[in-house]
Length: 257
Image (cartoon, rainbow, N blue to C red; front, side, top):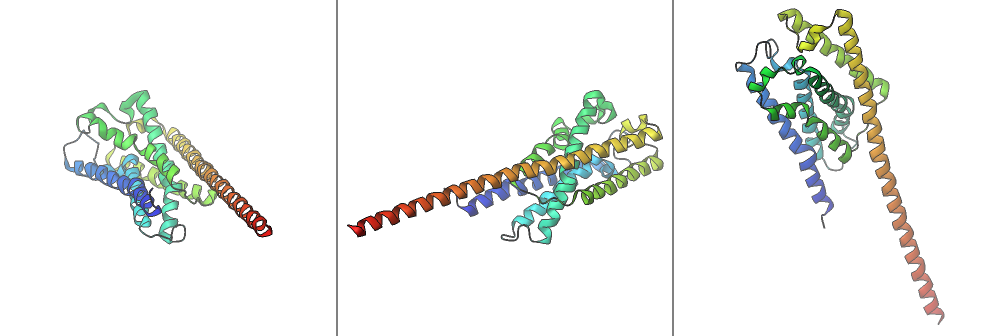
């Protein structure tokens, strides 16, 4: 039978260390491509740092890196500043933004891949890299929800932070367009100014929904687990009481004889 320490060690390896190593590998792979001959406009001005996909990968790497370090501090879970910051990063940014990247990318890709991931890129990035950037992120996030509870901040504060980050990214991609005349994603070139604003607010609405969904999933999964543990503990306590009562009655009966 595995001891608690064994379980914690295995959990650390599966939950945090391996995802961190995976994302670190993907990020390095993409940054190494920066100096290579790529399709026109792919890494011009800002390199991969102008793509939400890449920024999301860096964020996922940062989260799992913090989680791995935090796991090396036994007995401080939920108390240390690092633990609180880790939960904040996951709940407000890593889960909703990571899920958003996966869902939006494949929705647009299914409609017309040239709008988000032109076929010319396949020559430079193998299919597995596309899935590493745009598919595997979601199951890893869902796995994190299932194996680790996270403290969520007040909704208004979380949505405020998401809004600020969303606006910052919008200004960044507009700046890239003003500087070099190329939209980060070809899709954005189809919108008028009003359409671009509408598209931004639509995306922020989806991200808001995904944040609320993450909060709900966290409460649902870990609320039920706490209830299950309570039932088990109550059952064990009842069993102990019954056993002790039976023992007392038996001893009393023997003494009487």
